[in-house]
Image 1 (tube, rainbow, N blue to C red):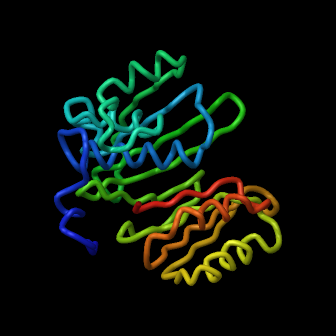
Image 2: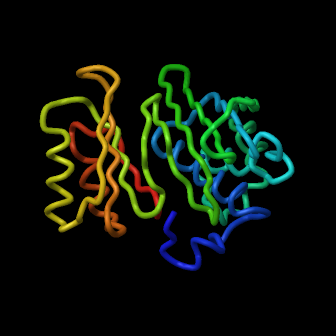
Image 3: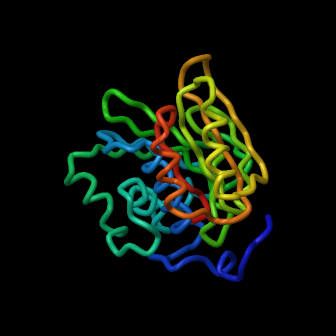
Length: 220
């Protein structure tokens, strides 16, 4: 793991107590909520390893729910996020698992609105930095060491070219890229690591593409 600044080690501005168990969890939830793109009726969270042992005491539960609701690490609503979610009629389900994972701070987030389903597996590697290791059952290998663009799109001819063409127009260099799909012609995924954070207008332009369902940035 390569850190880009001292703030990656110290951690972000956040509601405590822990950058790995609280800030990292909030960012996992935030990524899940952004990619789902809807208000869920049910949030299912499975904690593994250290998260499973300490999630209540370290605020991992409220942090990850706060993230799903769109609260960033520093949002003072995080401690009340479970109550806020329940007040919106959202049902929350926590469980722990003894299954072995590659990292002790691992969480699986499953969101549904009754019709649409979305699932993400994320790990918190310290200093508030996260990695996403699975999206909708598709394994990923995002390093977490720099900015990354995650694009959910329809599996159609030209979708990958359309996204990478926009990045080229803005002279954004791709360091690593993965593409995957479950079935031909269904939902597909692009995970693109880039050298630098990209301007907001680039993300907006990508999200306007007819093939794209939604895209978000990691490492912002």
